[in-house]
Length: 210
Image (cartoon, rainbow, N blue to C red; front, side, top):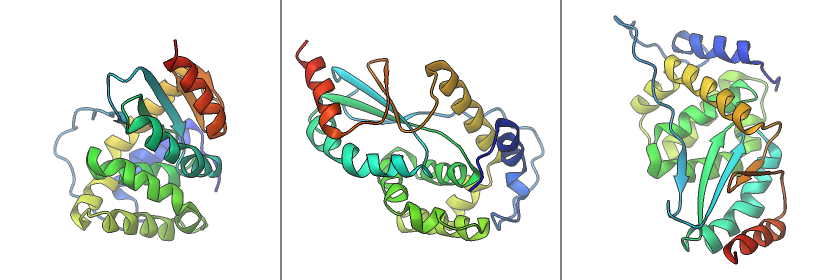
């Protein structure tokens, strides 16, 4: 898949509502809506002593490996036990990643992380095609399997203002934290690159012992 620059992603976002690739039609808006809010999705105790933010792309193979090898044990040992508060911030290198994020957000906070896990676990299946129509169909299947309705998916994946806002928010976050690749972790505000679970565990344990 070709990576897209800012201008290309913004143009894509603006055109999504009428895009034949998505295979849906939406009614014309009578008024320009206010810019939508783009929220972060987090899990764990908000008052946990350690805060971790992961920057990840749903089409990044290293991110998929991180989810399987690092995030799962992190969740069991530290997030579910109230020691770590974890936030996932999406990075959009390509249109497939943007579409996947729009679908994941469609289910709201309760479904977001389970859907994100599925996107990473089945990355080769839905993203491993050069056909955008097939990619979107595969992304929609994941949403339907998670309990979303066709109507929900139509609304979310044709929401051009939201896509535009998501791209702008991602760029602001990337610039603010000086993110250059994925996955990147911000651990209590300190930037770290991809790492093994053993290395991450050592950092967390040291912080908890302070």
